[in-house]
Length: 93
Image 1 (tube, rainbow, N blue to C red):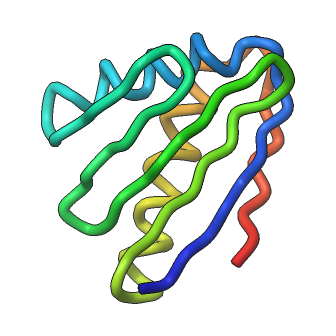
Image 2: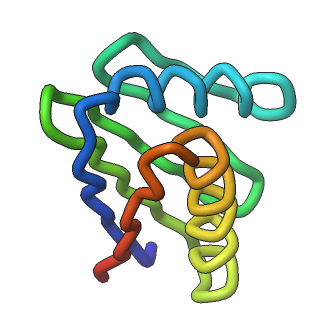
């Protein structure tokens, strides 16, 4: 499995985690509470953790293409939900 991680600095980490999980739950399997979440996309999984200072996102997938897709989906949705903050999302292997 290939993996990548992003740490997004924000005081609203729990809010964004819950928004993302509630949104994705309309189409895929999701398990979450205010401080952690897991999203099972068909192309990979993403695990999120929220604390007072940041939202940490870890994605895993079988191929580079699937990992890039998982990252892109998270990037797109988090950027829309956190538009006021314009979050910096930098993925690292």
